[in-house]
Amino acid sequence: DGGITQSPKYLFRKEGQNVTLSCEQNLNHDAMYWYRQDPGQGLRLIYYSQIVNDFQKGDIAEGYSVSREKKESFPLTVTSAQKNPTAFYLCASSPNRGRDTQYFGPGTRLTVL
Amino acid sequence: EDKVVQSPLSLVVHEGDTVTLNCSYEVTNFRSLLWYKQEKKAPTFLFMLTSSGIEKKSGRLSSILDKKELFSILNITATQTGDSAVYLCAVDGLNNAGNMLTFGGGTRLMVKP
Image (cartoon, rainbow over all chains, first blue to last red; front, side, top):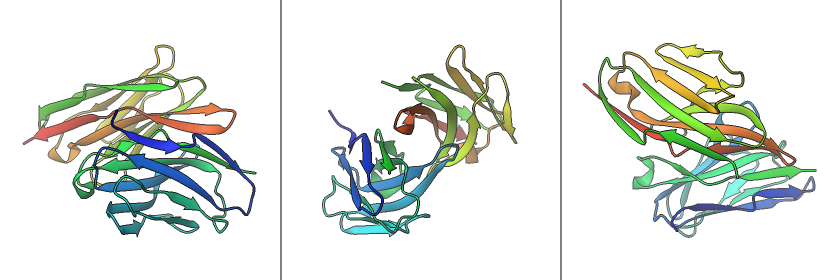
């Protein structure tokens, strides 16, 4: 089955801890993205990567970090510097270095206690 | 499992035509339904709908929600080539962990001159 997977679906962490969200795709897509969605708001772009070993900050990158060592994987670390980390996080990928439709994963709901 | 289905998958029209895009959903605890326009990078937020029967309008775009029949439509009148994009429907559902977005597969609209 081809697709994008995010794990885990629900994640609970204590305040002050770093946490890494997983995003994997087997669609052979070049570009991958991380978004954050808060209740009643649209998606906001955190980071994106158009090719392996390269990534760019989105609109709300502060307090987050990413890596893109493999084409299939784009993990997002939510650091303790992120002031309001509780949110729903969506990963997406697209072929052709991002000049095409984005396909979304199922999302991870992060709750920081 | 929450589910969102959009139809048609793709649509080709000529400038000036009117189009109707459909979104049906099954969600355990419905909070809102969101429409996005996706062209290149981050999807652009269009509408958020929470109440049945109240039309939201923005220029040539309008949308309405039917919570009894569990669907929404997005209308675009007097289409222009700039309306060519993928239109995404997403439903915001609430569970014990917080809000979760479920996306439909999108409708690809192409408007020809």
